[in-house]
Image (tube, rainbow over all chains, first blue to last red; front, top):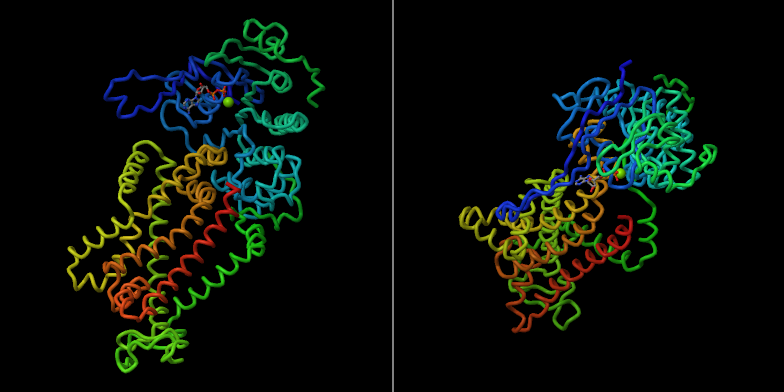
Length: 272
Length: 316
Ligand SMILES: Nc1ncnc2c1ncn2[C@@H]1O[C@H](COP(=O)(O)OP(=O)(O)O)[C@@H](O)[C@H]1O
Ligand SMILES: [Mg+2]
């Protein structure tokens, strides 16, 4: 086992506005938004690192950088001690290692596909070497694991509720057999009661499969329930990080204190 | 990681990515719309006539040996002097008008359907590429589309036809006339498909199932075909249906001004042009009946197109 599952070292990402021909001719200065600015943190294998911060603070950009949907401008990004920025390591191997659960359950699943096809997609795409009967068994197994029924494989995505969709997105992530999972606000579009079910499911799956989570949220009580370690983002910078108990009991940064003051302190049982 | 619990009845689990196209909704809405049912019946009759004119037309009107000049200018059967042998009357050469319309229908339908399919395929492919990749490819494709749009479709068709005449020479042009017309109508047609597909693709490419597929390293061609196309195609069916009517009218217009198919293979538009010459001399049926045939065909297609738009669009 490697010492860190994910490691960011001074990672930055700026989005530049597309320059039109007029901009070029008029020599308008290049304007950009620095979404992530010199961020460093480590995610330990088998643990949950939660990134928390208000909307626009750069959390989703970090998620996209980590899974490879965006390329960083500066810094170094290591997945299981392998650099993602030097050379082309972003092949099938990396895809088998790291997967993602997205925020919006309504576009997580192709509405034209049946659930069984959605869950089995990674088995084929990632060439996991399963035969068709094995894939079927796996789909049935995974549906049961995420609290659905094997017969749900025949339903199509648009018939399902938000919570059910997110369970299927989780099953698809499991089908890839990834060790590291980036979860970008996986429950923030769901009702509170459904949120609690999904969070519990994710913790159970973490224990069962030894998953590493980079868990993104703007909700402090969700973070308190999930996190081993916490990083607090503000305007593209990580203003504070540390073990969850420490950040919650003795927040060092005024911004963290403000975030904590803004939410009612729920008992940990409240999310169960 | 080990996941070994295997349920016994997993053989019935569907794991293929076939989209559930058949949602009873379309059928139910159809059965509740008498006008659409009528339009479909009319269109089916037209299609039967267009596909197998040899079986349906009472006379082989383009076999010159069957023509008899003594039958020239007979009025429709129900008019004084008409004959049941020629239900809609005859032309200057004693040709049965009903049969001529049925053969003309074949040409009109063929030009309409093939040119729409051609522009649909071109427009869909270019729209998907522009919308998915963005950047300079998108800029290039959409600027060409913008330029194309400043020319009315009929003008482009006239230009293409003229160009083909110059390049092919009149003999070859005569032989290839139908294909020149198909190309001339298809060429300006792709823009609308490309714009629609591009706009929807730009939305869908950001959907999480597309990002998930990219994370699984699905090939781009797979993502375009299986994830994006099925989710952007619906409005294209509606557009294509209506565009068939537009293409048929453009072909008729070209033929009416004498640029379309040659008189040896007359389309409805050719028949209307020829009939138009006799409007003032009293043989009104020669222009009116091909005109009505065109009118009902275009009407039926448009009604079906409107129905599809009403039923399918709310899902978008
Ligand atoms: N693809 C992009 N193009 C341009 N700007 C972007 C893009 N993605 C994010 N941004 C900008 O980067 C900043 C951080 O966004 P994001 O990472 O989504 O924050 P969060 O997830 O914390 O809400 C925002 O100002 C956002 O507008
Ligand atoms: Mg976000």
